[in-house]
Amino acid sequence: MATALYRSHAPALAATHADLENHASAQREILVGTPGSVVVRRNATGTAFYARQFYDHDGVKRDRYIAGPVGSPAAEALAESWRTRIAEANELLVSVRILVREGYHAMAPKPFAAVAALASSGLFAAGALLIGTHAFAAIVNRLGIRASAFPTEDIDIARPEALARASVPEGGFLGALRQSGIDFVPIPEFDPRTPSTKFKEAGRSRLHVYLLVPAEGREVTIRAVPELDAHATALPYLRYLLAESQPGIVLSRHGVAAVRTPLPERLALHKLLVSQLRTGRNEKSLKDLRQATVLVAALCDLFPGSLTEAFAALPATALKHVRKSLAQAMPSLEAHPAALEEMAPLVAAKA
Image (cartoon, rainbow, N blue to C red; front, side, top):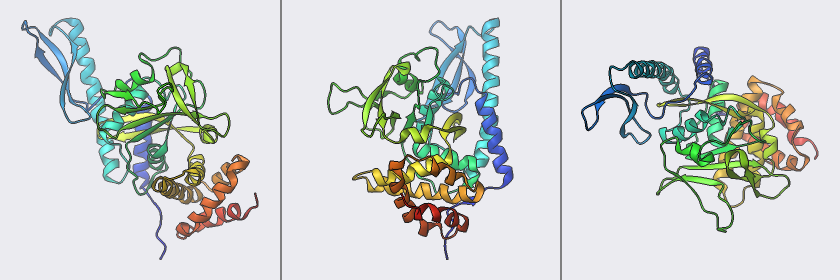
């Protein structure tokens, strides 16, 4: 018997997720680490001041100065403001715990800290997109479906065009990442004269962040991103993926961050495409194909016609690759007759 690739969450859970998205979009700044609490500390002279005590992405207890001295009107006002922010953050986490227990995807604290820092710096509001596996998870959550998780420590950030920013963030893209409290460093390219487009946590960590833009042609190149004081890897066919986007959120046991992701139908077809284009990376190609197949099954059930419309917008040079991947995916879609029916003409059509 064919196995379904996903199952739908209860409507009440989807409503909870939508409510979290509304709250996240209104956040001015996302707290780094757990919400924590407001505590009183004393400096070397014995003066009391307020601090926020919390656990960071590594589970280390931290204190962060708020204001002082205790008793001054300004310090009391700031401390009360922080108590309110912490209470609001804890309320959001109640909903996050409910969703995660029911199978919604959540990011680990460390990659969440990086994405949250970029969100707080205004990158997603200015037009940047979260893509890759973390975008897949956010889209699956937003569709209200439960599907297999695909863990990764890679974070892919894409910029479709110049971001709508009035100024460069302090320290550029790298500085925005470091606001997470993680010591990010550039990853050197093979040619030391080539600017870096990738970043990682210092040391032996596997946490990587990639900055990506659309290529002007068919070659992978490096392009400057002046509004972020950074450089990005320019990839062919990325323009198709980034042409249409939607709001979304990423969940973590530390909080919620508002992001933007590609439309699910474009992500599905782009993953079908890149699964054929990867060379020497069979594991990643299979992951792309599996993620795409899940989205194809869900979209044909929930939003019939959306994939057919997105398919019509594919570049002509991509069609043969997408059709080949679709043909490989068809056996996995046996439990989803709507997907088989909608995809069959696309597989059979002549280039």
